Each structure stands twice: as C-alpha cells, then as structure tokens.
Length: 315
Image (cartoon, rainbow, N blue to C red; front, side, top):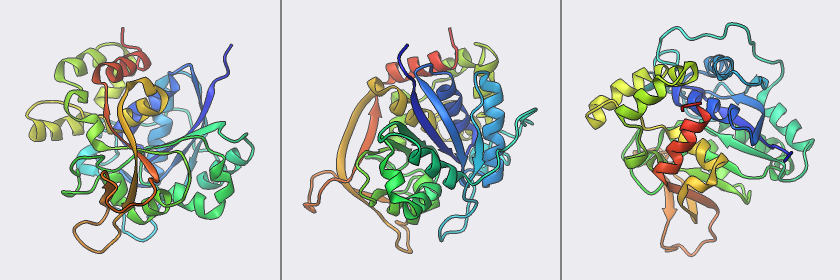
C-alpha cells in the first residue's frame, strides 16, 4: 500500500472550515496528524471545540486537536459572527459529544511534529489567520523549513476583497502575521485566494441539496453553513455557498483541480488605513523582485466539486 501523505491543519474552525476538515479526514490518501486552533472566525477555544465536533461527524479517525494563539499579533480580534453564527457553526447546537482538546500548545506541537519528520514529509494546510504559523516561524524557522507545501486559504487572489475592497478576511484578521509568513523565505507557500471559490466554483442550490440529502456527513456540512447561505442570498441572489476553506483544502489535497496557480512577488499591507490586510500581487513583475509565494486564483469547478462529493460521501 502507498504510504499516506501527512498533513497538519491549522484552523479558526467556522462552518466552511468544518466542511474542509471533514473532506481531509475522508480522503484515504492523507493522514491528518494533528489540528491546531487559532482565533479568527470565532475565538480560539470555540474553534477548537468546533474542530472536535467536526471530527466526530466525519466518522473516520481522530487526530488530536490543540489550542494555539487566542490573540492576533497586534490587531484586536473581530470575529465573523455574521457569516458563521455566534458559535461559528450556524447556531444549531452542534457540540462534541465525546472528544476533548488535547493537552499542549498547538504551535509547539506543530514544531515538534515537523522536527520529528523528514524534510517534506508533512504539509500544512492553514484555513484561518496566520498567527500560529507566524509564531512558529519566529520560534523555530528550521522546523518550518521541514514542511513540504504550506497551503493557505488567504488573500483576495487576483480579485476583490471580502472584508474590504482589497482585503480578504484571513489576511485582514492578522496582517502582521501574514506578512511574516509571506516574507519568510519558505519555498513552497501557496495562497488560495477567495476568488478561487467564486463563480462556477460556488455550490449552487441544487448541489447544496444533493450534498445535504446524501447522508449524515453531507447534512452536517450543509446545516452548519446556514448563516453563510442566508448571507449569500443577499449577496448573490440565492442560497449559494462560496466555500473558501474547502477550495483551499481541495487545492492542497487534489492538485488536479487547480486551473490557475502562478508564483508572484507579493507583500502584505500592514499600514494603518483602508488597505490594511491587502496583498499586493505583482503580476507583471513591475517591481522586478523575486517571486516569493504562489497565488492560486482559479479551480476547475467540475473537478473541485467532484472532490467535494467524493470526500463528503455523496453518491
């Protein structure tokens, strides 16, 4: 049997994170070694609780969940309650029935796992603000160099922002941390932009119904996104789902679904003004600087949705 690829998931687990985590736990080609929680969509402790709930619903194996950073590096936390509900999971009463948070600090556990691995053996998939990753880079850069790819749901990609005209939520939530990560010099950083989950990649009302009616896991994945669906009815005119974290997870675990991913010189705006959290993407190499990160801005919608169906057990 082919050895499974190991991954660490770093998450501010809201409703779209939950779908992404369930997808990863149901992909037989991968092993989630551990999950680290960070504040973002919800405070870090709630994110850890939501990750545990997701593991129970995923119904496969049970990686440990550790608590990481509960505060941003400099900025005050501003949770996305209007998008994901006060508990991050649609306020429908989802709680873990059995699992509990593991002892130890998530950043330290991430570093320990990387130091115990071979170079490139473990990939990191980051679904929230980059506070945990920035702290890990500052604490043990050599350990972080041992990671394979670091795939991040973050940036507006090549499009517009979702929390300001130019900024995407995960980067905007802790732009100082994102700047540390983007400018770290680590070789294989991939930002999956918010634009990658828009357009044809959005789940349509019919596709949402198919997933919801497919079984317990599909029902869980859709029901916890009820607040986002209501928000999207106002934004897009119907109950669509722009699944930012599942798109990043699919790009990380099923690269065949990636249509456009190029390496650019990028830098994160941390100025005190309306462009805070924006990521400058030098598409035309105007600055003449060496490209430092990959920007994935488009997925093949059919392959991406097939992967969602496969990993959420939709037949």
